Image 1 (cartoon, rainbow, N blue to C red):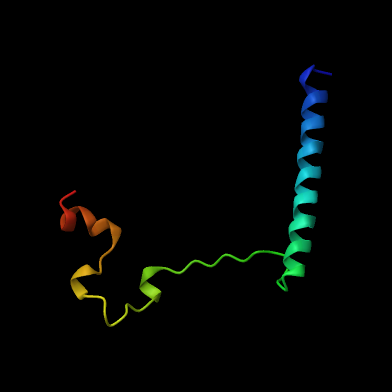
Image 2: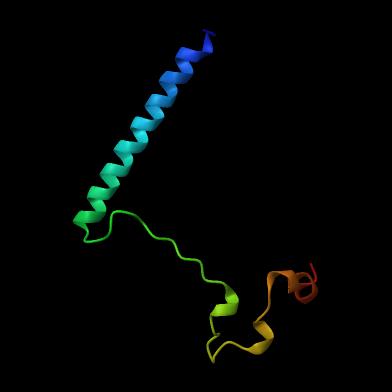
Length: 72
């Protein structure tokens, strides 16, 4: 068995144990806060959201248009 195998195995076990403990504790905290056990992330793209009436049309653009608008 190579010299690195025992230390790699120990590191892998510690990593797995740490992940399990962290997930369990965060799940308990979220439960106590009245939330579900897992956090939820949502992605909203700029095309699916309407701009407010107070936002001027000249200030609405995509990042690819920034160089032309701002002289970058």
